[in-house]
Length: 106
Image 1 (spheres, helix red, strand yellow):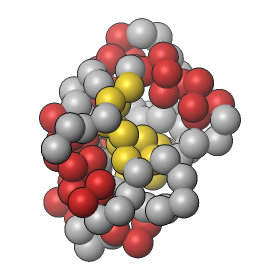
Image 2 (cartoon, rainbow, N blue to C red):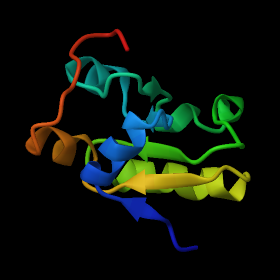
Image 3 (cartoon, one colour):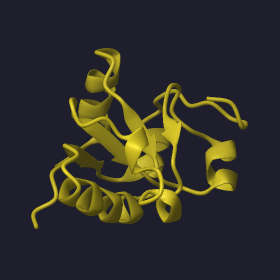
Image 4 (cartoon, one colour):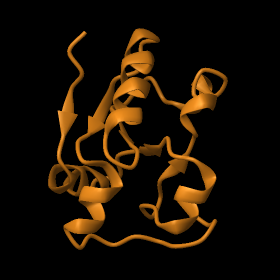
């Protein structure tokens, strides 16, 4: 299966339009830095939390570097979710100077 991907600049444009973003990293990674408005669903819980992902809109999935989110996107697409991987993950987001939130909130 080909996994659709976008970069962080394109993600930022989609987020400005209200697109949903899901972060599949672990709690400690999320607490260090995450995108404002993102929803935390650690990769291991994605199958149990499938109902959290809308099926009527494209969703964007991010992790630290892009590997875990690619696996999540593959699973989600098999379940009928229009999911797109964010290449470079939070590392690329932070390296580009985009805003992030620290702490457990979100």
